[in-house]
Image: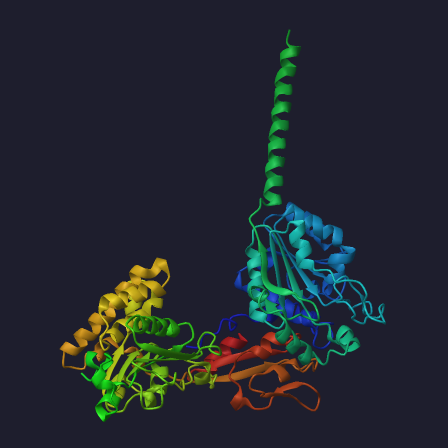
Length: 295
Length: 326
């Protein structure tokens, strides 16, 4: 018998096939990240009808259009805000947010830190390709220092944003990072995020081959992918092996996992208590009113 | 029993005279300990060296362990006697070869004295990556096929112990090396109490009890094996004689959606078997179907979902294909 965990999963079952082929450039890592997400959903046994995918604007934001589930393609930077409302109103849904580095950290940075703080049960998948790909390759908050983009023709002088450190500091109870090179590992990470009872932030290091890679002369798609293999290090090795990913040291794996009260449950409990006290007050009022009127 | 006796190790004025017998008596005892990284080869040699030193012998020990990581080869030469010059044991001159892993033991057999050498070997198999070069599922491993009985026919005195399983039954698989120390202690002339003292000094405090149990178990096992004239080790040592898993007959079929392929070349360059290529229209195709192992890396790494790998059992190929399209 051949042991093959991937045999049962056909990604096409989860795609809107009439939309395919997708619009992503050749070699774009976002397609691999999408497969990992759908694989995790498949292995977790989540029904497509109970899955809601919310995404913002950008190359990553476009991915929701290809998923055969309940999908929302919303305003730039606000997928977490929409998803918060959705998850509060429909706690029976599995809400997944797909967002890009610019969408999540620049335009939607405020929404991210407050979503982390609230700890609502959500899975946020941030696809980090270090650049605004769709709009022509402008510098993004995660662009590494000295990298060339269309708005930093002499090299980026700003320091890079470490999204995982930000999310952990803002209070996200699950933070993880993985590259697109290791698809089964990425799938397992997303799967642990999906089952986590709280806000799960997963950063996927994805290659932008056509814009970022071409401008910085990082080579062809396979060369960029092999660079991930040689430069990414699991967090367990971080202290011993000091090898940078694209000139920055980014550990991978599950980086933070804590148990905190989930916001949705706490909110519903408070709302139920308030409703009960209001009902009690109105009952007392209605009981008192006829007593007054009888004499 | 060809083990060295006490008279050989004692320093005597008579023996210091340059005669052939005296020279032979002054020869050091050579113990070669081999295994793979993580098994405790160095710990065994340290305990032995410490014990020999405490008995007043001159001891030299040398080892290679740096390149081993976990699963790489590790060996340690321990030589002790009235006088030891070289720290390494020449080929064919080891009195005792203690192997913590089956294939490593076989690899070092030429170092054993052909006529009197004692071979003590765990039948535990740790298959190295080199033995798995054929990556098709179910392909035969290039691991040693010799059975303990075959090996014992070639050495003067051989013991094949399933020490790992014995240590596992005691509750700690990692005490397997101490089971072998127990076996080793029966062919050297140090008292058992001193061995136990040396062990207590070298194992972690929490595991002293289980290690002492393992030591006694190894000792008793050898005593029992000596008492029975039959080939006793076979009963407890089937591990080295596991038949190779049957080769599963299957065929690999790549289902390629050409209109989705964007010629990014990732699958072609990252295929471990290099069996894909881009055709004249820059669309991926399986160029060498016979080399494809069905590892699915191309399917997993394709950003455009253009490849789907099907592994069909050869016997019911039609049924599998039907199932895949259904």
